[in-house]
Length: 69
Image 1 (cartoon, one colour):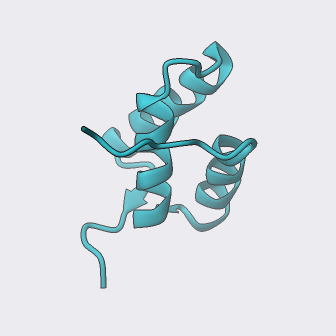
Image 2 (cartoon, helix red, strand yellow; image 1 turned 45 degrees about the vertical axis):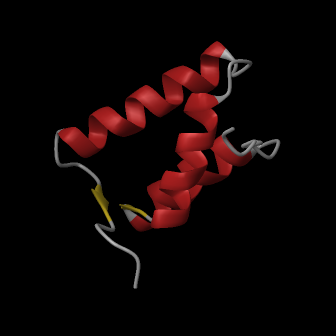
């Protein structure tokens, strides 16, 4: 059985604010996004925000931490 992942309310907007401020997606942010993506009850607006964020990383506008320290 897989462990239950629960997204904290407002987590997506906090991740977006953090990434916009720093220009980098941290490992913790990535785990938050993973929990959001696996959540079947995610709102469409949040799903679109995640898509925009991932697209920005793909295009090189944002960076991400490759590994944990």
